[in-house]
Image 1 (tube, rainbow, N blue to C red):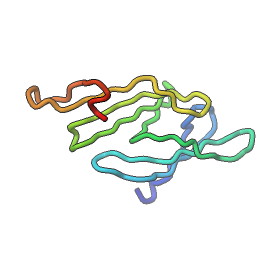
Image 2: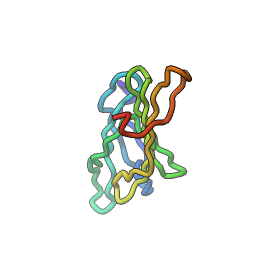
Image 3: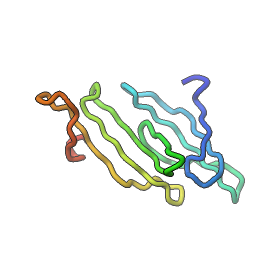
Length: 114
């Protein structure tokens, strides 16, 4: 990602600026980043340890969305998280697989996407 490898935002929605570093690009649109959160008590940043693919932050709703695409888009998973005490807490997740008959992504049970 070159010059765009660092992003600044309030990733844990606590009112303090945090930053992320681009980590890796995978097949298709999938990417990962490392998220460093600011601790106002120590005035230092710490690695959140968050894991997720292509995380997107909704700063208004204070939610984190994950979208993972596999196998040329034939399988996709989505997840929604909230941040509690600097941890990502899963709210919901969905699995979609390509249906040859209907020629569209169809929701399945999560274990069908793993």
